[in-house]
Length: 308
Image 1 (cartoon, rainbow, N blue to C red):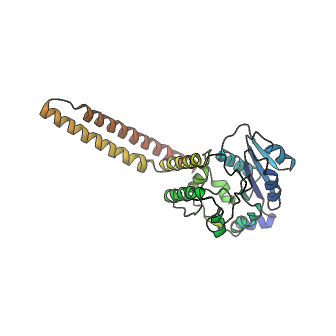
Image 2 (image 1 turned 30 degrees about the vertical axis):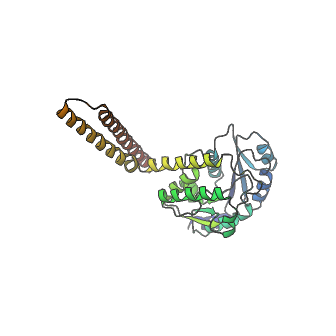
């Protein structure tokens, strides 16, 4: 008997809507009320808001997780995942508190999970013509660039790697462990899902950007933050390839410069400072990269053994 058959036997699956929120007093009430129509429980993570976000959510009777200070979108998602596990949720649907996601789309996300067609369902603004039209041009460029990098790093085949409107089934809730505290968490989750052999599919959604402050970060800073997260995650995942190989190449270049320096000294009895410095620099960089790659690889192997 599978998980869904067990749930049917014991009653309806427990669906939790998780809403990360930071200074969303203008919109949080409407989002919560709409989400309550489609979810059994609503959990709001107040990420250190300075306004009335938490007070409004509490008056609406939702489950509140409070951060004493602003810790970031990724940290808010971590708290929502923990609370969903504590509630023994069968499905966690995450959506933003600023109103850009339509809670009435929740059934669209839940259906593939109930039918066991996926472990994670992600909303895509590019699977629907209307969805793409509503995205400001500068956002389209950034989202597509980040998505291409994510697909290259994880081979996950998604069209919208930065959409926070997602649904996670029980297997995903149990297996996913992520640590990014910033906006890069959306990419990290996709990479971790690939590692855990979780099936990811996309469903079309339309986001509302009119009159909304859709990001607390400037778009450029947001993009740079996500890009750095991708680089860090990829290096952590494949340290021998992305640190070890360049390190060995740097060592070889350092050796070549060293041989050249010795040849000059043998012929002219003088040391060319620039060549000597180049040899030392490349050699030191190479050694550092190689030792770092080996250390990260050893840590990764140890973590894999511990978590088995």
